[in-house]
Image (cartoon, rainbow, N blue to C red; front, side, top):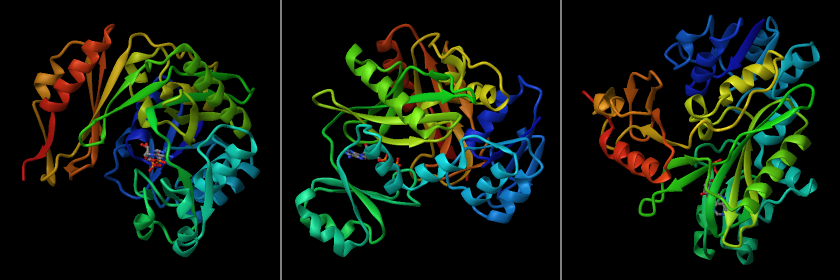
Length: 374
Ligand code: ADP
């Protein structure tokens, strides 16, 4: 079976690593030969995942196609689907998720809890909604990795809002942010992974590390699972989805957003769950039974990002010391060059004891630095 992945970044790379268990011929479409996934696939095709002709030409010789990022040409995928190529997630689901306005309308129309919002088309229109603040302004299309999101606390912040179609969403008093990965096969059978919890750095307010399974009261867990499954059922698409959820101070659970693909919040599932998120997506693409999502042990993920002040050929400080730690698994994404904030790898830590996880996560964060030799 010939299966293509649109995008050759670190998520594509990890998908390809998991594909080694199956008889499958893998194809990747990406703009640069240097991308993390290029040397792990059977066929690398250079091209633009946003371009109709490139995606169509790439997909028409394949049996199935999936994505590692939603910034793809959906019209080409819709045409390929019409011609009989299996496209998971469906082009309709990708189209819905790609635009945050359409995505929010989807939650509202299906009565899926999400923070209250309104749509603004320009800064002038935004200025009419000062009463709605404090709120979070989110670009309808094109925002990624925090770009395209502005927190507007008061009237004087309006000038930092977007002058394009955007969602203005009520700011939630966050107790916790969690992510629930859910999957569905072509027969409508579903699987749900234990939630992961993002632990933010209270000083820098950056994502510090992640713990899984999240520590949640049972009722909150049930709500989160029910909401994630409701998103999946209403998307009506085979594939694997990460549902990002907010928990507020009153234990209300809201959907923030959904990613129609394998997700950073599921990296730990490679070692820490019986079936990884990557393996699960292969099972769905290749029509095998769904896997067991249970955690083998609790785990933490520390992301390795390029340190401030270093750009150039990458060097990992204290890599050996970290690799010697028991139940610690280092994943490097094979990028030759670092720059501040660039995602270069991650470390998964496994332990029976959450205190031990937190301790090791902090230790690794301080020890393992992504610098450069230039
Ligand atoms: P992106 O798609 O760029 O990751 P998100 O919509 O997930 O953007 O927002 C990024 C972060 O901003 C979230 O993880 C959360 O911490 C904060 N945030 C987003 N929306 C809200 C909200 N309505 N209330 C409070 N915080 C929010």
